[in-house]
Length: 308
Image (cartoon, rainbow, N blue to C red):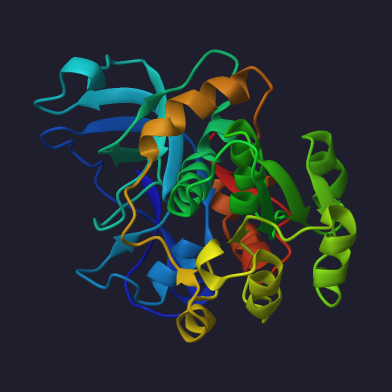
């Protein structure tokens, strides 16, 4: 099968290769899918650079959608599936291949509901799980006012919609690319950068109750703390160095993973009530283009590879 992977650590553009590999065999509790779509994330480039280093070669592609074509032992009960079922989920990344392949193994999977395209399904796992886990850490309650900084990212875009479904009133910072779409969800939207405190206060008047920071590091945390009134009311998913210095809760490494909510949001997406913006769809053989787009900082949504 064709698979995108690296044999040495380094810059993704230098070390990634589209090569042939053995089709993986599902172990106990695993299934194998014929991959239809694979979402790419910045975590893929971090893996190429040595994050969670281990035996090489390693594959990339941490979220996939496809059709079940083999089932390992001990796949029973609520996890039971049959050959031919459409599913999606996070792909394991510690083996010689991962999701950016013609076939992939899954330890966690969710049925893909009718009406949900494989590309849209492949865009869900990382954004939904990361956003939900961050909101869990904040403890969002109905009626609270929440600021999502960096709502133009896929995680931030998901967080705005999830926070609203949890009953929060949401203010989002975003550029013009997704400002209109975010307003259509019911969020108030303002720009990011200098003057953020004054702009948010002009919208809100009072301090916000909670802040989730999903934007790339930009020295925004002091302003976010001022808006929330306390560093403990802020969680950042990106600026971990500043978080430690300022007393902000940084990262979600100790929080419980929330892949259990994927089915709920897949159904909402199938009904047109939830979405992750798609920045581009590319055949597996054209992988260099989305790599370059992602790393340029101008992905403008989820970048997805398809196997054809």
